[in-house]
Image (cartoon, rainbow, N blue to C red; front, top):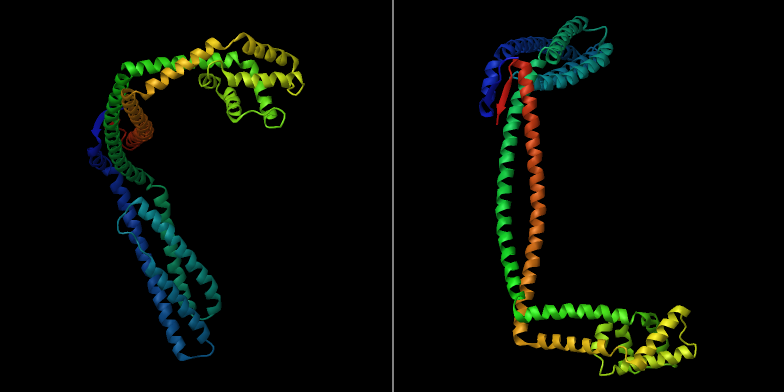
Length: 415
């Protein structure tokens, strides 16, 4: 194999045209000769068709009953054939695509002429025999010329097609490089936008962090953590009463164990949020005790039915709360912590901080959503970019292989 040549893509077509002149010129000369020969044969058909037209028209004017109908048939056949030939467009520029397109179209024309001849000649017989023979000779020569052109375009001219395809590949590769350049510029623009967005996100995070370091906000976060701990404690301490509370709700709706409105509401709170229920109870949690006393009475009368193990645990917990003040410490902690949070939230400074914090957090969420959307768009752009690069790589390799087959030269296309 010859030494590798590096040729810039923009110069490749000119180089390839010079390299393939010894291949292309003889093929184009042969194709031109075959087309010219075919033109001559087609002109012979035209001349014979015009003779058929003239002779048929002359015989029609004689109005001979024996020949009139046959002359009219000959006239119509000649007219139709001449129209078909007039519609035939022989390519001026010789190329594989032009010749193949012409051959495909004229093949249909020949088929139509053949059908019309086979249909009408028997009806014209036995008259105009010499005219018909001359036409058949001209038609056969045209068919032979067409077959020769068709065979040449499919076989010998195939190498010219490969050369033409390489020119087309060069154009496609240039187009792909333009697409790649456009994709890279879009990616660069997207990256700049993303960097600006990241800067805004960092600024908002910094502002949020600064607000959270303020004493009031820091204190509020500590209280919130303590409330979370107390919520867990309240759920745990009252866990054995959750099922009884739920069943007792059904009894409360009936006439046997009515509760005042605040007691009914408080029962719902102990089910949904034990911490808040305790935190908003008065000293000694009278509402809870009232509920538990009625529940104890319902259990004693067999109105509140539970499984034995669950019933035993519930009775034990009711007894501890009613008679041993088991919830006093938890109740006090809940009330104090809740009160501290309320006082802190009503502080004017805290309200200002909270409003700012809320706004910064909202801004941060919106900016992060924009970043997610931008990242999604960027991923699509990167995918398109990679696809174009792969297409360029494939097209370049294909072009280099084609050049090697045509010129026996090892060319590396520089893009």
